Image (tube, rainbow, N blue to C red; front, side, top):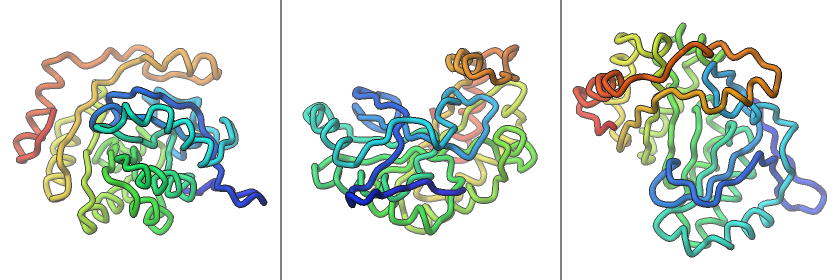
Length: 251
């Protein structure tokens, strides 16, 4: 949960950026300018951006430089906004907080895509400038969560509870991996937990895919889910219904 913010002698806040997407449509409402931050403390088995893990890689940019890029597409973002994802954007909280503050000055909606595996005190300044949190809860059973991510579950649950405490609008995301995250006990436990959080506006069940498998090969990393197939529409529908049975808006 270490942070990697840096502010050089120029006084400008800098961050390490993996890449940007100027017309994203799956990371929050509307058309999004998506910033993929470098660095992640999780080691998810199904990660499709393993090249974002190393906090020392990526391009060093100032907030000013990134805001200038956002400004080029500002007219397309009026019904959308800016999303910080990764990687884990809360590894660079000072940068993301300043970026979101500047986005608000431009009248743009801000969304934070996070695993919730963070130090709350470091996250709070970011949340002050965040309109929507996309909270990825990888699993609910502690042992299974650790198997999937290689980090403990409790910090994410604590983060989720804090978001409810401050009434921060939140979408919960759950990746359905057949043979891994799909045990009924795991899904029901997560659904029951999320149903206790009045700030959660919706749950997104994301089908596992292998579009990032080639990145693992390029990095020389063993991809343990090579033989796992994406879930069928029927499997996805079953999991969606478990969340709906708890009174949640799920899709």
